[in-house]
Image (cartoon, rainbow, N blue to C red):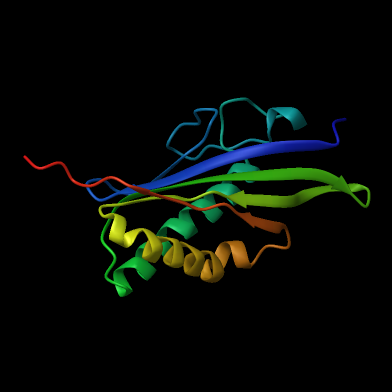
Length: 150
């Protein structure tokens, strides 16, 4: 048996779309689930590990949207890749580290610093991430894409 496993989820929000979560292995949008293939489950299906990471990613998106709205920060979009590392510790497997890597797209360079500050605030108050015993690593990025004049 391997000693470590890595899982990924990615939540996104764009002003013109709804929020959504996607997984690397292309699970369907309905929610049938299975154990991961590494543990004898069916490939291509949601797993409990996916649900946990999708919960972290989607909670971060919704938390940031609320913080940005309260601060009146207009932004184009937010992508929140989340990686979870499962390792054997004290004879049992558990998530030992979860890395949240939000990528915020703001409209103006003048909003870059506010975006970084609000990402940090969302990381601090994200309910799901704050409820976990895993080490949480935070790797934010803010990108500026000024609107194109038509």
